Image 1 (tube, rainbow, N blue to C red):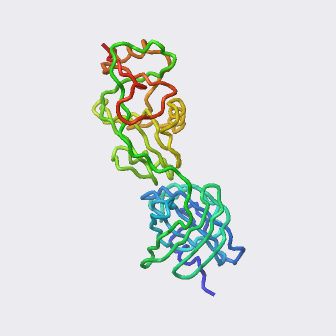
Image 2: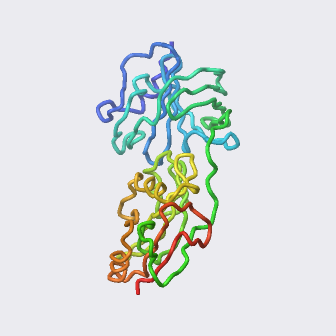
Length: 312
């Protein structure tokens, strides 16, 4: 009987990688385990592994599982992996096959509806991955994965940025506002999906997001000669539009993302403290402050819920 792990062993040196490399050929088991691993290798992708005849049949999916039945994702068929890989997490050393960090994104059980050399139809039962999927071969190792049942999620918002009205005086009811610096940068809405974004500056940040889908609102500013993205609002997160949510909830969700790095930061905000913020903006040579009503939804275009007051 052919050893299904021969190709797997041939690509790995057990003295150099923490990955499991069993000595013995696999033995068939129950054929109902699946695992999806997030793999930060040369390029971010997700590895879908389905237990079959004692091994994990494997596909590398660059954009992760499709959310929309109308959009199929590439799935590259790779070598079978040992069952021990279903619990593997760790850092594969650089220079080794698949070098990079690997974590478990989800795992659970699955049902087989069809399994042939060119088509695999399954139902996944995980915490994050649920539903009916079909993998079908297109050419050689290249397959596609298709979601057969719709997943309920909000569409990504396509809207113009919300902008403040200009006033010469700070709001009287300051406790109802959160105040931020006006940065005077280049306003931009940044969609992040499948670890990718169209804004080159934020590609490393997008990769850190993994499979998380989000839309950030902020500005690109120049500090000490370097461009930095300042995030100050979150319009979409993990399949849910936040546009109708009050500012305070959107702000809390943004802060939970912990966006902080050499080229990206979360804008500081202070509730009910307009005078110190305006003075700090004046001291730093910034254009002014923006007051945001704490219970306001996100509105396209100019809105009275946001107020810009020049620093001087």
